[in-house]
Length: 274
Ligand code: IPE
Ligand code: IPE
Ligand code: MG
Image (cartoon, rainbow, N blue to C red; front, side, top):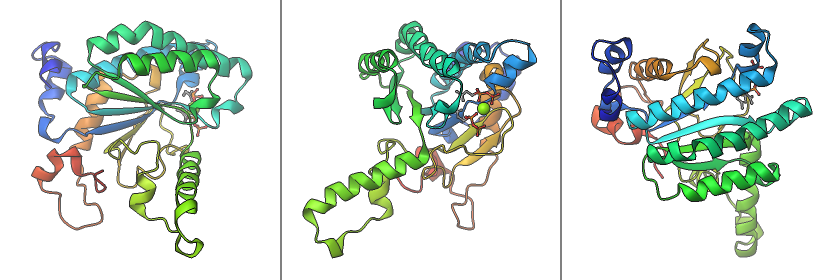
């Protein structure tokens, strides 16, 4: 959190809030459903795409704040497998914005030692966006600070279908038909997120109380935080509020007592360490 305090004015609103956060119990993995861009634009009598453009600024601010805080993993739901249902010009603007964002932000990602990764059915992305994405992933792969994981053309059900099919493909050659089996560890090991711990904290902006096909398997024991703030308005302050709230939760994982602080300090009590 040292890098965060370097930019906070002592006594300011965010400084006071950050002082309340225990650096030993930060969520290791924060996942965000970035929702409300369209409503943000509508309130201003602007076209929906103006909301998406403003949303890119919130992504920049959130990535920077997470990097300064010392968060290890940030998964951002940017385009769902169902978002193709939107008007074609909105869909193509979203992909163009991704392209522009990656190009513009690459130096900033490096500055904050951010490594970029992506999950979803990436083969179906428009070629220009996919190429820019692959280039940014490649360019940042040696950075060892915050890992920003973009969920693009992502669906939680697709992810499970893809995992089961991979398992079937692997086992069919080897195991006798009667002995084919799947277990929890096997499924976790075939998810797009196999290299990430499960999210400790899931934030959804714009007040919607639903999961919208995001990380269905991985959020089994995530702490949920829904804010009325619309995504384009989301800033460091809102992130700090979410983390402060997270630290008040009693994570029991189905047991009875509070997880001992020593255990929470490690990847925040992920019940399925991988
Ligand atoms: C989230 O904002 C961005 C994407 C889903 C790509 P929305 O575009 O869903 O905004 P609302 O929910 O219509 O306000
Ligand atoms: C979820 O938001 C997907 C993303 C934020 C990328 P949506 O706006 O697509 O979700 P619904 O339709 O309100 O459930
Ligand atoms: Mg929405």
